[in-house]
Image (tube, rainbow, N blue to C red; front, side):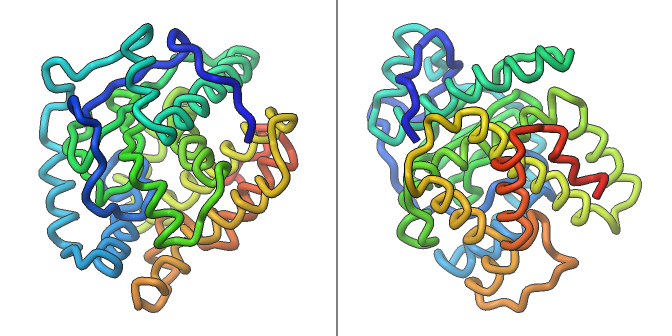
Length: 296
């Protein structure tokens, strides 16, 4: 996807990687919505299957992390200007992520303002192995996630390598899809949908996973809408790359990879077929209103 070079003033970036910006430990392969219970099971299963992580330890750390106070460590915040320029150019993965963020800001800012929803930009938080978020501890094994408490998209860019090497999800647009999906959760937060779904999950715990699936599929669809509204930037193979990534991170495919029998009642993000279908629907329609996963 040929995106314009980011304008440092058009993106909000926080860097928790420290001076070296190195990328280390293996990562999990899930895309959580920022709260405990949204994708945790799938993330834990894949971490256990690929990296030998104890899933109970991972879930426990997330629960404990939820009680922590969010925020950045001294000297680690970088917003706009030369600081964003520095953080976004640590390596190609960082630059690529900032380019996608800049495009997403422009696209969704226009869409939401046109629909009467107040728009605010999320921040992209780079970290390596471990970090802190408004939702608690950030760990590489969680994979990329969105925290609604601080409007942060949290990313250890080594995840891109894991996508290619462990998941077989390669290509520039597959990586853009990661950012666009998490940005979709930001849109849900701005519209108030995330809070409504969270409240419904607390009222009806037996429906928590099913509601999570609908939320995640809508974020996939929103990623497709962004791609559709930038169709002139797409290159040959981009759509196939994105759809393949959606397939590879479907709950059923991930569970099979973890050596477990897929159980639909345990899904939190949707099956491979569902994720591909909703990403395609967003790409084909270019209309956020077509992403009503709760009404279908």
